[in-house]
Image (cartoon, rainbow over all chains, first blue to last red; front, side, top):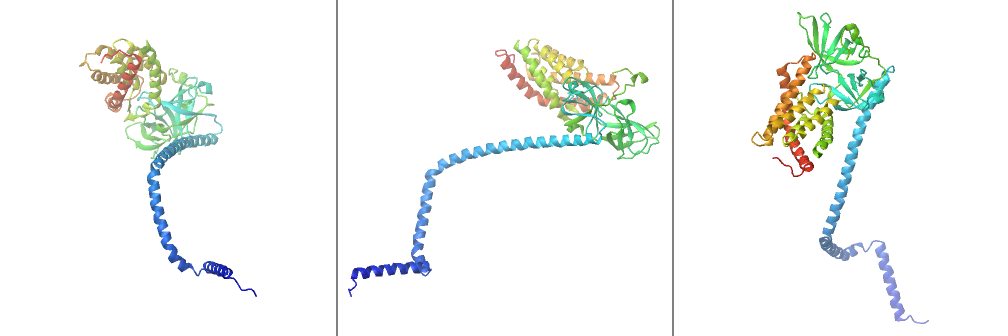
Length: 281
Length: 167
């Protein structure tokens, strides 16, 4: 038998040692030992890495700040654009809400034909309560047509051009609307004023009026269709020695925030001025 | 010549602005009158008769919008231009003092004419109450808008008529 050479024996010992160490490492027996050896290296590497990154940041940070500022500006622009879009969408949503409300109202009165119009201005004179709408004779609008919203009566067309019309609100001093009480058979007049307040006039003293009573158009006089909401009684002025009682009325429509209205296009106003002896306007 | 032509787009723009925005800004029941302010601001810096053309253009545009008879804004603005012409350079040589005086008188004339017209047409309103609720607040708002309008018209004038300065 050939004797084993010292070199082969050494190699075999090395292989056994390596395999043994690997076996111990894989099976976890060397972990405490490796920890004792590796911890100083890891700590040194961490320390070195932190210092290196600090130096790296020191040299590269200005460039990053510039990039960040640029990116920040881009994002701010984007945010501004998105906010602008949100505002536009909210505006469209509000308009859509108003139009849906008007549509619901129009559906609830199928006998009437309506033309929707946007409010584009007010009368420049502070003494008058008029609004300007963006539809005119080209859209079938004619003098005297009643104007409403889903909340109630707004007024009537007072002047018409091809593409715009002027609407006299029921709160105008020159406006008079024939009304009736919702719960009682009593007719009266709703009169506007230069301050925009509306009052109930010419109501018989025998009528028992209470705050909260609802007023509807009566259709008398031929200027407005009947049964359109006008307002609600707020404060009653009743004096025994007067022929009629009066009351302050809260209109159903907020005239200051009007944005869109409906014009009743199939309503024919009746001119009764020859019967009353008044001059035709 | 350019001052004559520029009055038309400027007054058209101011009329639209008046109807859409300024009329909605109210104090009690009063509101400012941009046309009156523009006519006065142009008039106090004008030696000629161009302010009358501004008054005419503004009066016609407003008379299209308003339900008041056409002659009320027209006469009011013409009277403002006339006052500016008469008082030009006479009140301490200062356009601003003159402007305040003209705005005060112009607003008063316009409102008195409106009140008179409404009373004649059967509207119930008391003169003193109307002056308190409409004229005084309108005056305050007019004074509020006076200086921005004066600066605007001055700049417009410098652009339209370079080299002509009467201050």
